[in-house]
Length: 286
Ligand SMILES: Cc1ncc(COP(=O)(O)O)c(C=O)c1O
Image 1 (tube, rainbow, N blue to C red):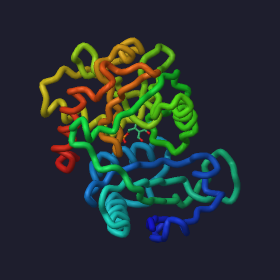
Image 2 (cartoon, rainbow, N blue to C red):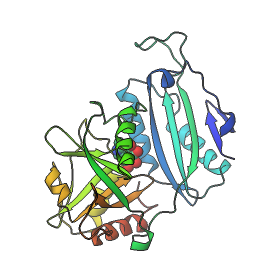
Image 3 (cartoon, rainbow, N blue to C red):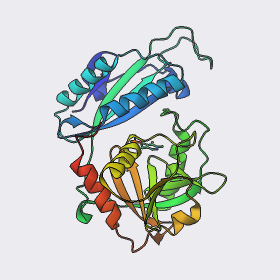
Image 4 (cartoon, protein in one colour):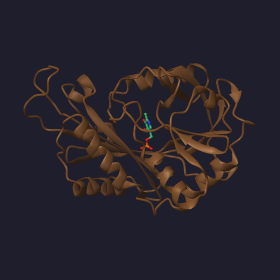
């Protein structure tokens, strides 16, 4: 039985209740984090809290919990859910209102909800431990503030369904100039001409914690050429390797795009080496 947290109370997830007048339900007026936890130990908490604050600021919502309180509630949630390998979902909405109106009310008590879900043990970078992804490509039709980790994810959900309809697990998204933005629930790295490429951050991409860690790990522990710059559709379609990055997947190799194999259709050597860096530094990074 999963234990959840709702506004100061730990409760069985099946008994957790939030009002339909919560602005998170009415408007998707909230933000969230997903924090991975391996062997009972959360990963990259400072980076997740930093982005949570940026997201809250992006929707002009004052935090109701201090960082120390968030740390304590997450530690308690991990403990109550038995530790192990877990994803921790943390959502903060603007809270419950009396009347549905678009403009924020002057005063509102934020709703804080968290629960845990099981995640796969992380990969050590060996080919056998890789969770491979197949993808399709689509024009990015989400909204103009993708840098906020907003719970308004309908655009992402519809794109993910386009992947599912093609028997794929993710969708690689491209802006009006046919440049890669990100995936429905991941950032993207591409290996082209032996260079590791990832698009620069802007309003069309979520600043992924895993993307940030990947760039830091490669800078500190590899001599590979890395370029943060626009990545074209052609570079993606002819890539030597493509990786997805997210907190609960770390780096995952893409082996097919639009039904065609990426290179030989197997996880590539650079993915393996980069994921080994995640494996070695899992708990020694911020
Ligand atoms: C749209 C989107 N981009 C990128 C990411 C990766 O972010 P992170 O590495 O912080 O999990 C996510 C994760 O949920 C996401 O939803």
